[in-house]
Length: 265
Image (cartoon, rainbow, N blue to C red; front, side):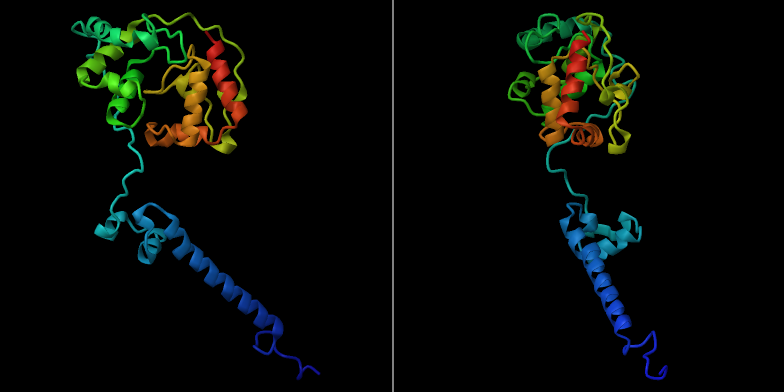
């Protein structure tokens, strides 16, 4: 009886044949997904083509691929501002605050005579100078778009932007924030969704260079900017930090964050 039974590893064994066939199909399918379909879906030229995909999977440096993998330009302009602690050291020297006050006369209709807006535009009084300077530069370069801000900044030079930043940073803020309990998204974020707490960059817990002070800002402005980051229509955040955070936030969390910073005024 044992002589008639097929060996375990034999093509005569239907179970072995079926298992080997299924494993072979799985291998072919996985290779097609990993080396054909996924590379073709990537925008980065580093993954284009079978050779590039194999080299990338093997950890080959980009330089080994030579001219076959040039860097892919971004789909939209991104911020080119390099933030350093000393980037605006001279902005408040030599009377630039006074000159900035003169330049700011064109800004009063939207941002208020003393940098406090009566509309849903950002309050600039007391805002960090590097934050203001970066946004102004981004408007000029096209990294951030606005039908109002772009023409308003036309013709202004780099020193003009520094003077404006110094002037608004020197103005007193609207009022001392009255701190309310922070919602979870602001105080702790959501680590499992790669969402850092807002306070880790925008004040209270810590401040990151270039990150604006959010307290006192109009709710609708904050909400619209978070939604713009989430949808990708605003893309001047360095290394896509805000886009990665905002797209993982729920509408309720966006509303909670905007309401929290608005009521702390």
